[in-house]
Amino acid sequence: MTAPTHRPGAGESGAAHEGIITMTITTDHTDTNGVDVATLFATLDAVKGQPEIATFQFRATNTWIGGTHSRSEFSGFYGATQEMQHAQRTAVDSDHPDVLVGRDHGPTPVEYLLHGIAACLTAGLANIAAARGVRLHKVSSFVEGDIDLLGIFGLSDGSVRNGYQQIKVTLHVEGDADDETLRSLVEQSRRRSAVYDVLTNPTPVVIDVVTG
Image 1: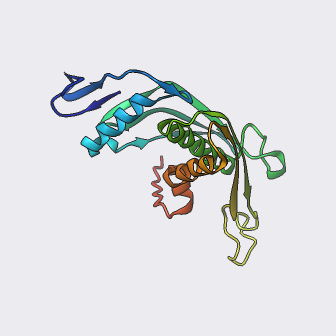
Image 2: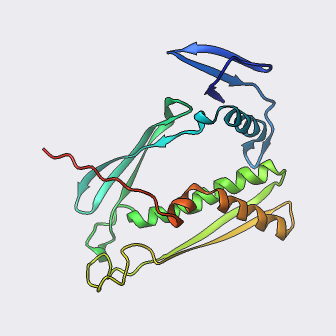
Image 3: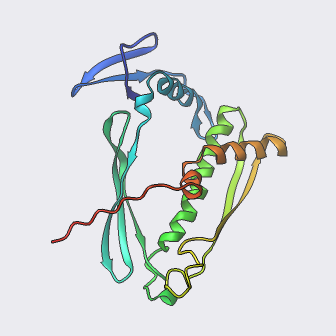
């Protein structure tokens, strides 16, 4: 892991790069569930020592293709007090199905929310289980989102919301632990899930418009 820091201590080496002091954490790599546990704990220690490196900003660039079809790209983000790049640029398409006057070039925007909560819970579960020394054998999930389109179409008296009325996640988890422990791992993942937090708590959304 490389992150801005103070003067390096034992097991660390420092180097100046474009005005940023960086820290390289050297650890013995031990993987559990595909997670480098030593680096995971070293990262937590680094953030405890320097809370400012925990501030991140993720970004997406969306371009209209035609009709209800658009494409989003993900490449750069800000984190650990510097601009960073993903290992590869990722593009995803979104559209409406034929029944909703689209061409079905990709999942609807609200379906990506279902992917988001499932992926976030799964990632958190893998990390938390690894930190607690529990090996996972299988993790899968089925996510359902109930929505009433009367809200989107403006055909209700205001009693029907535009978004999901409920999202239900069913997780299937198998691992080297009893049922109670596996359930506690999922619960801890839920408590620490950024996507769960976004979906269950009001999040300010600012929309700026540039014309011409």
